[in-house]
Length: 466
Image (tube, rainbow, N blue to C red):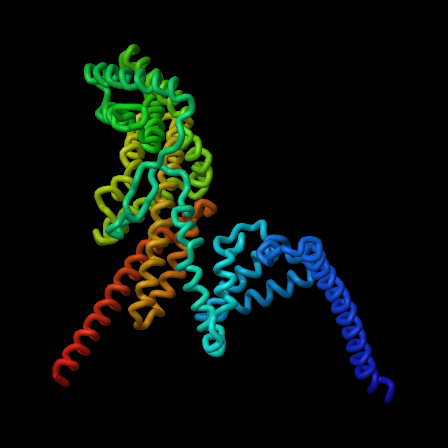
């Protein structure tokens, strides 16, 4: 009886001893691995006395790879730190992630920025005494105001028909994306031939019963070509070429050939082929095609991605003129709209389901290309939101709504970042990104008005005292 009564106690003591032994073994092993990593750094310093810490920071913290126990502890600790709202622990978790794997590029952390590294450790003691929230907020501000952060501006945009910049008035403006031309002499000859062929094709189409959409496609091609080779708008050329291919497909049927004269169809088909040949000479078009994720659009569903695109356009139209240059941004965001409509119209003329699938593919290709522009716009919008966030911080006031909006806006931009794939939630993210931007803009304006009113009251009070 007594044996049975004491068995749990013996079992508990045995379990405790086993746990202590296991912990001792883990601790001993961990200490050995840590000492080995320290010796590697010490050997590097001994071998090259002039070596500075910033060079060591560009080598992995653990020479043989992060041990499982260290990786597990770090995941747990990182999650707990980032869960602490308002303390901005990402300034340290990013720093440590960069030390663990220097090959992973994290702007302002990897490769390390020596000025920022020094600024961290030279913060005044008085600030450190205020606790992590104050210290981390100051480090975050230092990073946002640093040269390396400024150097990153624009890098969150990728190849697309249009890129977006901020002009001297602080507005977001759109510019066509350009890059090198391969074999300019041959490309120039193709360009001149294509311009002439487009004019001849349009003249011939006007003497047929071809619908207006086909005429409009050729006119948009002429606009994309410009006067000289260097005037070509690569993104528009790529978009309109897809619509032109859809027109050829629409007439390349038994019923279609009865509607369009044989010579007119031959000219239209040659126009599409020469356009494709010219496209191959533009590096920008090759980059866009490499980044356009047509299959992702098909998987998400053309109507759903189209809805996301339309929400972006509607949201941009609602933004005030001091935020975006409507004259350049709105046409850039709507560059593909006419092509999408005309492919849809062409698809309606084809009863065969297999043929309709080809048109759906064309629509997805156009949308995937346009989504590159949409992504760039949202990326620039979020970048500008950071400026407003700084302004809000500078004028003071309750910033909780701005902080929350900025975090949410960042997640919206991530969806459209060069590394962010399209997904089934694209429409929600697109709408959220623009709605949040409006909130940021309005909140900062409100805070600035409050500060101005407060200053006016202070000035009046001083006048009365006098």
